[in-house]
Image (cartoon, rainbow, N blue to C red; front, side, top):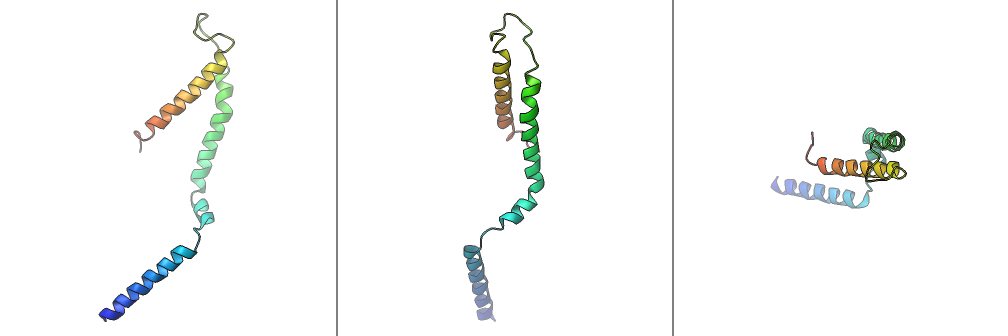
Length: 98
């Protein structure tokens, strides 16, 4: 009984070792299982990149003596606001998990 048990364990281990080496991961099954999350990520990025510049470009200078000239205000502020908020999101993501 003892011998058969350990022989069976060795056979199972050999089988899992062979299966692990020869078979490729089931990529299509993995993509299907996480397709909803992949769509969410795509949709958030798409909407962000489609709407953000259009909405941000409509904002005008409120002070005439602002540091950035009126000609460059839209470009500079759009760049800074997007990148600063992206940086803050990246910094706060590990801290504010739920």
